[in-house]
Image 1 (tube, rainbow, N blue to C red):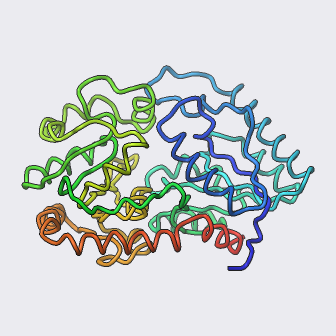
Image 2 (tube, one colour):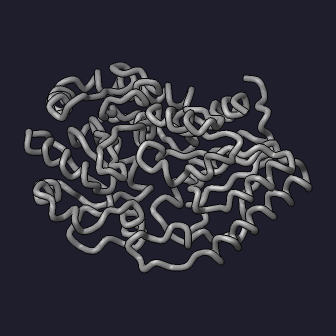
Image 3 (cartoon, rainbow, N blue to C red):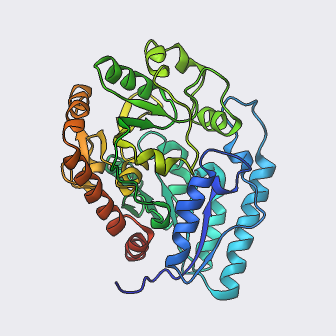
Length: 366
């Protein structure tokens, strides 16, 4: 593969600079640590605190104008200083519009540095990136359904899946099944309802992840749930007792590989609610992460998943919960097929969905 035109990069991922949060370590591993080996020089913000930008929505409102101005100026100064020192080919960010003042982007562009912003919630939280999308040099998002929104703005964009750090995707192929299937993740309204329906239909399904027990969630989990508008109302859903009975608690990063090696299949529920309460199915990080681990992965069908993986060979998808329940009945009887799905999915993710591949595509799109 030829050398990327993006060799000197400044990267800013807001979540990595919040004092706490569910996504801090995730994006550190797959954004900063994944990007660093594929460029000649990676510069990231130093001594910048974005905690104010990740304050939970249920917390008392606060005037963040001073913090917003201060962090915006810090980031701008560090980018321009890095460019003056050794030259930058691009800034790559993962930011909401509220995180940085648009003038930061304009000042960097005026210095001759293009700005790429990644955003993975464009189908149901587009309003939270729109102001930034209008000024950056290139918008990178993962959902095909969001293309009309960016096109309507008349801004440059590229629709590409997530980029992973291959060193954070150990081979977790299931060779000695301990459980037929598992769902791993935090509770959301659609997940509680769908998991309840699958369990009621007879699916042997274990649930792991933070937020499913009856006790108070830890600080990072509660912050993440509230930030996404998820609160105690989840426990009032009709299906909650059925689902909660299958929950076995969270998994640490160290525990995850061993746990996955005992799962014959991993289930993905990739729906989210937009601001109108409409359920939308779109590509989530897990839709490539679990295939990357060599898991036999079953998720809801959508155009994004079908574009990123070969359905039926590298991933399994369902169009209804009845079809999902049927897959969960069949897979324990076909362990070889399940293993082949996992192995093929891993090969595809490592070949096409890592930073080594994505950095070239982003450079070409600029």
